[in-house]
Length: 261
Length: 375
Image 1 (cartoon, each protein chain N blue to C red):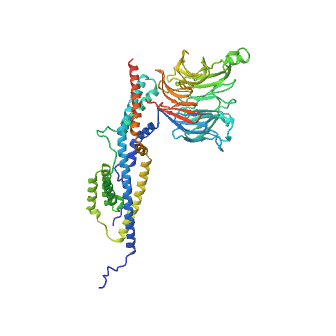
Image 2 (cartoon, helix red, strand yellow):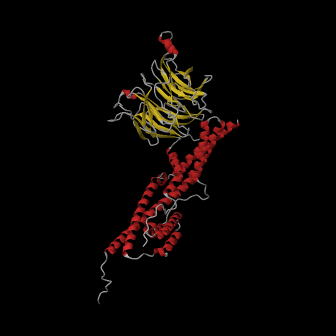
Image 3 (tube, rainbow over the protein chains, first blue to last red):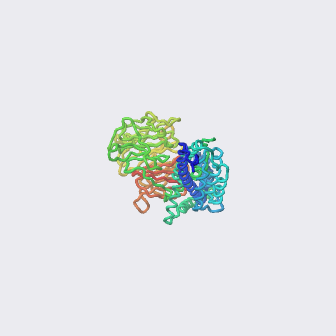
């Protein structure tokens, strides 16, 4: 039987190049998904640690600064002509207000550390690989993916596996998932997707570096290391702040007693 | 075909790293700092070796004659206490190079109240006061030429005045007023006070013996209201005690003298400018400036510095209770209560930050102590 002419059609250079680029795209998609997962994990861990820190330590600093502000105000009240004392009181009040804002409100529930299950990680990795906005060159598709990826990040932080599955299904069934036509335009699209993915990898690396350099991460590392040796670093800080709160309370009482006397 | 360029400024994460780390940054840094300290004192090593002179600024910098190091010329160097590292070497045109000279052991260092300026004299430089602008890292020039190397220099609390205490039998006390705009100091002293009158009488043989010999002016301190200057009058002699000379400002007229109880090692004013606290022979005394009534304080100290606006004093004594070890400590001047003691040796300078939120101390051995009051 004579061969079908379509079977022996020579492979065009752009098609060969497209095949190579698609392979490269698949590899970079996997790498990007891994990086996004790493970043999401670090963000979630640090976010949870930050909430815990502010709950246990930040609120205590807010209490301490409030007491310090009251002490400074008592001193300023007793020395109305002392401009420095007045300035110190104003600064102490501003600091107390700033600390209160940073520490936030006390929550009913005690914040818990972040712990991702293997299934959660698998789902996130899959979402990042399929839905990542830097893996499309279509404007509308990109906007849709950005929205879904933001939802996926939030779902990851919340440990919501069902939401990640929903995002994945929603995108897979959407018309944006349908690919375009022709080797030439597709090659350009793939090249641009690879370039965008590379750009995003650089961004993630910079973000990771920034997070790893932060005091928050340094403190978390110390807390984790100390935990292995049976020490509770957050509790130690709490103890030190409580000591300062006690001293501030005594000083305020002394000042108030002196004013009354 | 639609091929879209990457949209700039779009984020796929709900909160970026900035949002995450910045909100808590100050409180986390505070926690790390509190964790590192065993008390309200924090210790940092700022330089290795031993320096003959070191002075600490209100913003936590130490200026010191760098200890002689192998193959390295000596310099006057600024160190950052927080980083525990050199920040800047003070360069002067035609500066002499020395690898360990006796002359390098002589120095006078005086920080301006806001730590923007530094006045320095050093044995290896021209015999004048050298004026540095540390904000713009510039050497501004020399002023106040001297024959005998001076002992101490000091700025007033608001930076309006600068005084220099000379040494030797013919020592004088010099006063400069700083330019109102840039606090610039220049030229010879605006006013000077020579040796006390009795020195002249002593020279011609009228008085001698137990009175001792005038050795120059010692520690100087401006009152916080900038209406007076107190200067130690150093008197040598086995049984001789130093005096405190009170000088009125801005006239710079010698007002009165007060006989101290021994050799004065430090002078400071209470924030209300009503009392002077001085340290002599390891003991602290408080003097009412109007009546000159004096009382011994219930603690020993060689260095002391009052808080800018609270009844509080940071002190150093080389004798810890029941041992021969030194300590830094705080004194509540109302309750006369000593608290927050910290073992320390060879402390040479003390300083409060401008707002009084921190105190600093520096030792000859390159250790710097930062104190944050718990109130």
